[in-house]
Length: 266
Image (tube, rainbow, N blue to C red; front, side):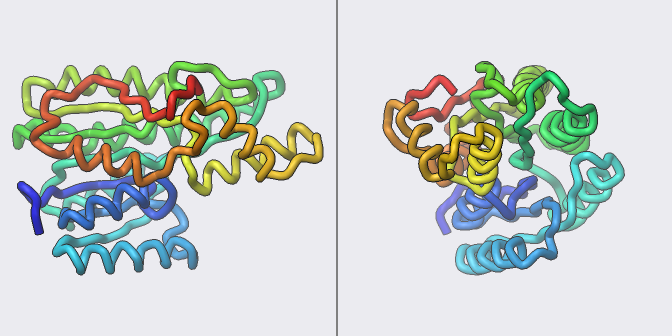
């Protein structure tokens, strides 16, 4: 195992998409991870957890998973207590859990707005609030928020998602300033479209809403044409960046929004 230190890491949303890729990457380097996720008992999530357990065993790390509903403050508190009990301390927080919704502002429901904002923004805030004091006390920490180009570029029919990611960027900058004198960094990684189950769900919603008879494959192909590199970003690319940000070489990288876009604006 070749790494400077075995870090103790929380990854929200670590059984799917970007969060899963991050957890797999960090486990391959021997780190200790506690994952928070919804629907942890589903067959798909259990299969993902099994793969992570194998990666942990192979590299000398550890992985555990507990239910986490970021909309529920009590669930966040319970999860953070379980994570600290398992890890002893928390060195790294990766806020990768998130939801999206395709709905125009006109007629947008309060319930859907609250779900997206409370998951993507308020949930991340609660996780940071629970873990930041410990990082400050020990004089080292990394907080990495998975954002989106939606933080700075509007997108039709995505008001709640865009607002949540814009808010997350502001939160990232405030946390970075609070932690700067204590060896704690905070950054936001903002990718464009990434090859994940969330992307597939988004494509299905777009196709259903437009009613043009297109397939999701055709909608995906159109998105590719809007990315100068001519490809969809892969979750492993985000994971590799996260691994670098955990290193001492990245100790000066804080208060930044790091975009991974293949040259695209959105």
